[in-house]
Image 1 (cartoon, rainbow, N blue to C red):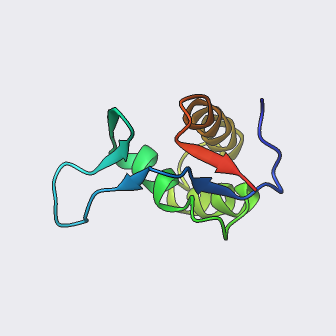
Image 2: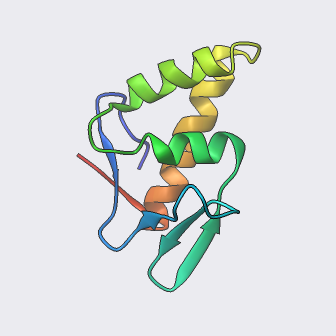
Amino acid sequence: MIPALHMRPRLAPGCRLNEKSQAPRVLLMPERVLRLNGPSLEIVERCDGERTIQQIISELQLLYSKAVPEKVQQDILEYLKLLHDKRAINFE
């Protein structure tokens, strides 16, 4: 499933980020751990159920302003799909 831009990603039940003071930053999931850094961490931190995918894309396009905006959007959509397939996030 390719997520629509109006959807609001949220961490799935049982999934959470470890504390900011703990390094490395990881996404804790039932039976699994996913190490996060750079853009992947930026994306997951924004999966709060409040921001739409479009808002996340816009924020990260500003943060990574030297990158091609279309590439940033494509990468975010692909990463959100991957997280959804791993049952780490849900879309509202």
